[in-house]
Image (cartoon, rainbow, N blue to C red; front, side):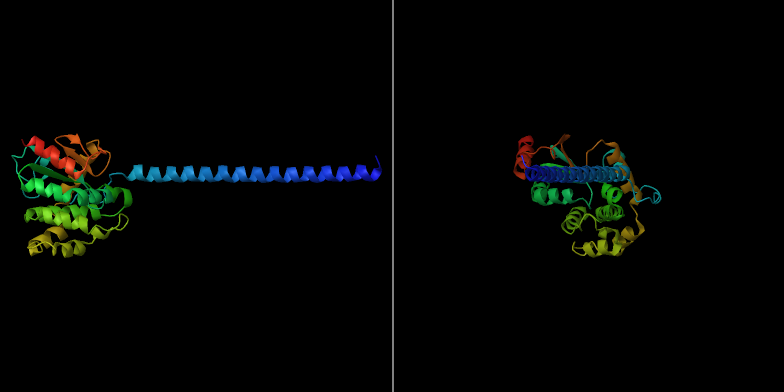
Length: 257
């Protein structure tokens, strides 16, 4: 073999080796980037989980505002349930809700008409319990202030329509719009006869704030996974993926036979 041919083969081998090394270096850099990105994602997720876990269910940090004052007609253990419907109904629906909770709004919009129909027919009693977990998770006071305003509406005998107005006009989860008491009072104007001086004073003075905080503590101690929690005669139906408004109606009507 001529010296020229040997030199040409050496050059080709060297070029091939250099190309392979370039590919290996590129692969090493790519793997390093992937691993680094994965670590960042894991740490980021851990940080998010840590924040949520650390804040879950916390109040806004304010101290309890005076004595616990339950709204008019509150029932159940420690007077923490706002009842709707007849006491003699054969079925009881227990609902834990947060006025800032998007899933609660979705439940209400889907089931509201059926629940109203059944309560008005005397077949169902609903016990509403109010929680403030979004205040703890996202920051702010809108859950508590909206719950206090709903309790003020209960004092005026207007809980159900005002409850519905709050969910219909729920701001985005990250928007603490319900912390604005004037906003809550403006929404009361959508309910006939609710926007009175007594209601306004109740909202602005936080008359039921301590009751709301006590209700939220009961939620925390109840072992529930989140809001909404919906129990039909003690059975969690919100976790039943086959549940529909029609199925709920059938269950209640069957129990009423």
